[in-house]
Image (tube, rainbow, N blue to C red; front, side, top):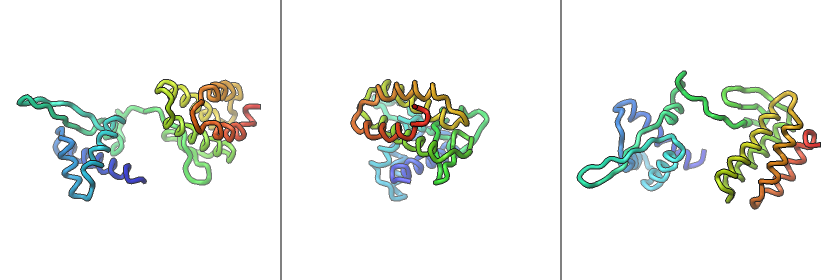
Length: 198
């Protein structure tokens, strides 16, 4: 786990516990002060609170009083779901990932195994998604491209993937992936997908 995720975990755990005990909104500065006692830098706490707000793990509101406005935060339902499982939790779209060196497939709550070639293909497709996220493409272009990559991944986990679906999605990817660094990755993925693209 990288340092940023360690800070984020600590922030969410603090907000979760605070919500359990008091069920109240709290100022980000107070969270930063509390976590400073555990050795965290104030700026890194505030920075990561902002990240968690952006990702929907933390909710925010602005209160006004005496001509001054100030922000308060609380752990969101999405944040609570990290610590609790509930029948009321919404199932969110889950990317296909692999764990370990034996190609153990993780898709939502489902676990199984797939071939080495498919496993390598999914790993490289996940790398492509990471490059897409870092690219200078518009948000809409990123979403479309990621959707096409996920379509291929969803086919690869099936016993009999549809060549037609893979080929159509691949054509869309090769047209849209115009950002720096995509070319070499696409060549590598194309080699891995040769059985379905031919």
